Amino acid sequence: PIRLIGAGLPCTGTQSLVVALEHLGFNSVHGLDFWLNTTMRKLWTEYALEGGPFEPALQTLFDQDFDATQDIPAVFAYEELARRFPDAKVLLTVRDNAEKWHSSLASKLHEPPEDIARVM
Image (cartoon, rainbow, N blue to C red; front, side, top):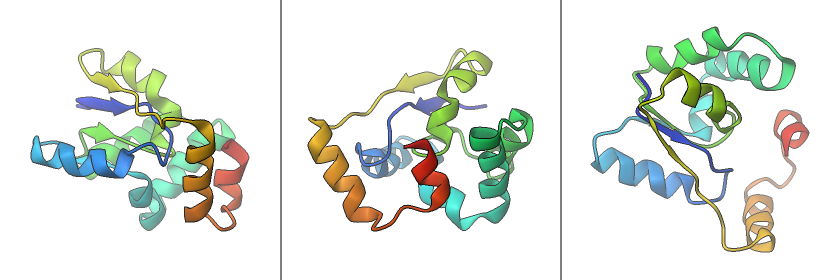
């Protein structure tokens, strides 16, 4: 089951949190995992951006033995994940201000892929 649900947008400390969670025994999915795994990317894109079914996207997490979520696109499912896993902790990460968040995001995405740009 999912034990920890990240509710923070990218560039809010999610990558650092993944490392910290590993030390605590979690296996956390992060944005890069979705982009490197074409099956995950396809099923999560269908769910998050096209209104597709949630079950196939969720199954990709279990197939990889993930028990924690961080970053895009899983962040867009935090409410659904919380409903399905009521014992999971929900952790919201934020930046100190919107300008710093935008600057950090922009520095990582010179030109965001169309799918990311549609949901930002």
